[in-house]
Length: 592
Image 1: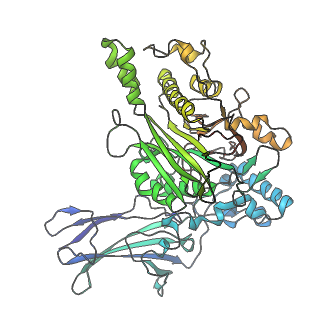
Image 2: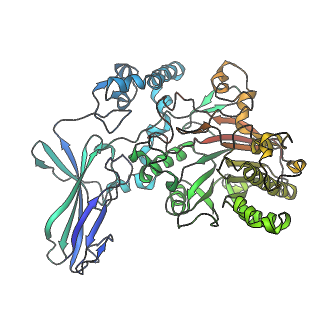
């Protein structure tokens, strides 16, 4: 007979919009164990599994803390109610919780007050798109999928059990909590059913979750025009003809998001089922025309990012890392997405630094050192270069035979900090490849990614300045002599960092944004924040002879991240922050 041995959830804290998938271990008639589902349409040994989900509604409602959503609230901020800030933001579990979060919490009040002064619509301004569209950003969180096994939403009469009422809310193995579930416990029930009589056999296996919490939403980041015209809300921003937006974001792969490395992040907020929905909500909210993601696992690209962003009008390309060093079926890589109604795909180039390392070793390294050289240089990193053609009104532009092209490079440079020569060599190799494309096509370019190099490092200097000073300290790390002569560490691409545009603005309105830049390099103070590292690793470079920065996604300050936390966190689901810039073509660089 078929029996259920065990049922459990990877995380017992359910979040609105994040699908719950119980682990169900079965023992078959022959005593073998299996986790395969057994459907009514395909019974096993004359039996199948029946699932039910219940919302357990207590006679006493419990509010949850806005900072620690797994804890019940014991106090409420009256100022939030007066400022008409969403009520969920007003709850705290303890006086210490409220005190520790005060700097961040006060910012909610200040921004609400400023929004009222500017346009009288404080809620749209302060909380923006994240609060208005949570339920529509992904297939798993859409109204269609939130029916949870029903053809249409239906709520049978509740079952009373002491001071609780159980409302049946789902009849499939998985369940996606809705806003109606917030503050309530969910109960999962799995029964073995006789395929002939349709009657349950034996006792049902059950589990109960903690209370459902809303998906934490950080304060939205505004788009800031760098021409002094103030900020534009993401929901209301209209991209003018001839402009486009590009996003770069390291999304932190599941294989890298270990509890040991990020012990400060609650396990439920570090789980992939939660993070993927939070990341998708954030990415879709930016509404970028081009999206460059790094650290995307190949299975997550195939099963999640590509199909979900396809629903929002994006075509995508993916280059996974090579496997000389990495092993296993889940390997991350670079994924580039672009809006089908704004661009068409012309050509793709894949850069495998391993191949370049093998060629370099064959040409330059003595035979006795080849193995040592390959061990140092072969790190599986890649870059994805995509050439796009612009569309207007969903049609390709043909201006007297001229094609409006754009080249977008997306890369993730090696992480190991002591391999400074390898980082610089990878960046130099990429730039040399881009130079060849620029020579043949005369085309505007974007170079995006996680370069794992801080401002002022040799790779950053090469990107931003077009050369590396021969006295740069990074050049002292070159055991293979692959960086010599230093005079070869140059390129001719007129690259400028998009976020350095903040440094060229004038006026009081931009002072807070300038304070978030490093004074020496004009780069952001940080794009990655963990307990062990705070600094900038991510950049968007553009060719300044053909593109102009119109606006930028505002940078975060440490107050925005709260003083007592690091990334990832319940609000921000990567250890990096996203960068976004809006560009305008200032010169037609195209080929007949």
